[in-house]
Amino acid sequence: MEHLIEKRPLGSTGIEVSVLGLGTVKFGRNEQVKYPSGFEIPDDKRVRDILALTTELGINLIDTAPAYGTSEERLGQLLSDKNDWVIVTKVGEAFAGGKSIFDFSAQATRNSVQRSLKRLKREFLDVVLVHSDGNDRHIIQNEAVLPELQKLKEEGLVRAYGMSTKTVAGGLWVVEHCDVVMATCNLTDDHDLPVIGRAHELQKGVLVKKGLQSGHADKTAGGAGVEKAMEYIFSHAGISSVIVGTINPEHLRENIAVTNRVLQKR
Image 1 (cartoon, rainbow, N blue to C red):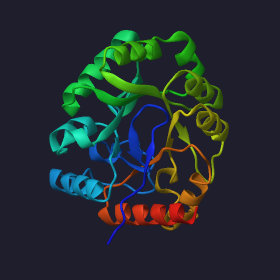
Image 2: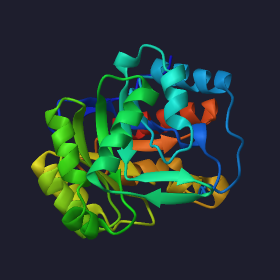
Image 3: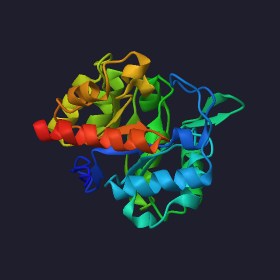
């Protein structure tokens, strides 16, 4: 019998998340992605099967974004029993015509949240992150996106918010002032370790992106393997969940089995 995946607090948000989250870029977009091989966007049956397996194995966290093509719309149509899911989505970036378009204004932020609510068929969004364009400091200091997310939180449309950052300075600011940070942590990129450490001190939520290097950590892609990757990630205190995207049921089972094995050793 397969063991359910462990759940952890998402910082001090009051939200509990599985230590593995399902990334869903592959549900809605296959252009300009960084995976080692190409893929076809799965049909509705395959997505339903993945979602059913995900919840069967104890994963309750799903990561999506307006920049992930039709991912949000498909999740809204295909998720069953939506109240059991913790959904992370983003603002600030859209993807059209094969390229990203960024807008961090207050109106664009509010419009994006309203669109995500409609697409996902939710009354509120669990977690909303700013999809950084790389210039974290400019976004923090000169744009209205974060103050607008605070207003949306006060209005009850967002439970928690933060940023998917690209720089240590940006990440440290976010953990000081927001609820959640999405940070990079993998065997080839440790630049965000100070951010993760500070978030742990302040009891802020940490979601890890690129933990498996967009698939390049797999031995078949020349990496050290999923187990080594997970051992490294979970050797750092304070990590709430690692977002891993897949449309392959066997990969999903393997990732959960490996993660359980790594956590049981600790």
